[in-house]
View 1 (cartoon, one colour):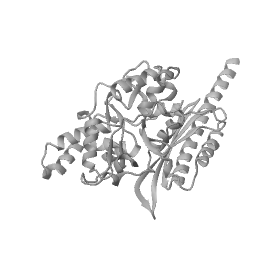
View 2 (cartoon, helix red, strand yellow; view 1 turned 90 degrees about the vertical axis):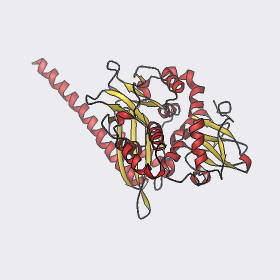
View 3 (cartoon, helix red, strand yellow; view 1 turned 30 degrees about the vertical axis):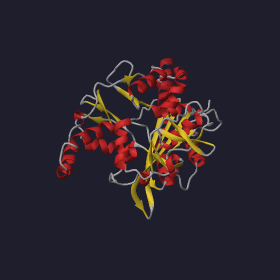
View 4 (cartoon, helix red, strand yellow; view 1 turned 180 degrees about the horizontal axis):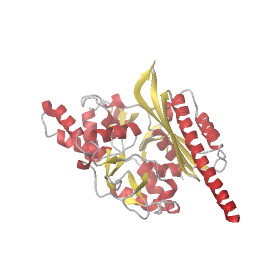
Length: 385
């Protein structure tokens, strides 16, 4: 299936010279996945602006929209005849929810993650949430401050956090946009001179003041089709996954990105590896990343890796011009999910630091397995006495 019937010409666009204040207003009014920036009456493509870019930017409202755009940025340029699976992969690797679509070299329209998910919805009943959800998640407590939550979201490159009470039970969920809406609404009530102090006060509030509750959840045995229908119906980017017998116990998170990632799984001889923010790769290639992971997982012959996801995140800190990079490696295997995280200056250093952590975790699991086998053998021998 290609995207010729999925892509749409119904999108929000602005001229490259438009003020960012106007772009921010468009997101508030129309809530698009992204705004296409063009020139010459829409004939020349400049790039895509997302709400995430605007939220992380401190640029003034009078700045031109083109200042934040990059035609070769994370949003991939797509052809109208590209395969849906390839497009899903490109969106995941670019960390993008929307991408421009071209026909004969000219901008034709856009495709969004929702467009793809709606098109394949009827085919998702064969997958369960347990097949693709993320187990290794970050959480916060009701007493954590809004400032702490913002830092945790930014450090981990995520947009939602389950909120737990003192007993570790799920009581709410907080997203980036919940926080932005809350802070913006309250700050707008103050005068310009009071705003800095007002923002600082809001950052010290407990997350329980801004979280959403009750939480819409799914269970591991639910179908991915049902989960995606819920996300599309209510406009959620993800859902908290709870255990089958304890509805307040968090098992993980399922996001639209997880579903897109599953769509692009391959049947190739080599391990399927997806890389988010692939543009940060410098001294290593996709093949180097895949070979490094395979070398680690081959040390545990009983482990079969079904899918690997590697995410790079660039920090502002630099050393002689080289940025500090965080790398997260997540494996989905027949022995459960494995992960490793590391930081270093440059993507290659970050990757190998994360790979070292992953190797320790894999060998630890292998050791546990060996211990269990030894204990079983010992018990059998004692039973024979």
